[in-house]
Length: 267
Image (cartoon, rainbow, N blue to C red):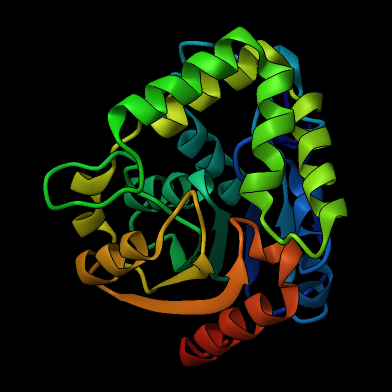
């Protein structure tokens, strides 16, 4: 099976570097539609769906391979090897920020920059570390998702999106969640919300932008500040926005922060 078919890879634009856009849990590459076209005017851009999401090849889904974020990171390495021209810049939303980090660690020197949108290396509070959730909260979330996925999606998606003045975005995220195969979504949710990549952070030697919203129920500001302190080459940019998907609810402010970071890297 080709990588392009497996991950529904779409390539546009030309430029001095290749920008890879990776979506978060319950989403697909369409979530980048408000930002990716502007980058296609200056860069080669690559959009793709994680296996199990969007229009990826569901026949490629393997429960063992994707029982950790490393399986997705391996896919990213294959996508970058096949489609990169020039330096590679990885833009990952939510869980894909950690997937991009793991791919970078696996391929030292392969990435010129990492952009993490709403990242979290660990969602569960642990001693002095503030992840935003107690373990019982995550267990309850996963139990609700397991027992009634569509109901969970309808309740959670608008809260995750935020942007109360743009209710259509909450509905869009709900519909995206509901299009995902429930069994795949359940496994990906466990892999996502129980992941802990804090021990990997010191291994990422690539310049990294942490892009966070001022009000995000999934990745609170304390997580961004922790990442800024812990990643070797990190810059933190906070934009005034409510929700976990600023590439949809605040695409202009998000692009401004990313552009400023890329300019400092010489792009």
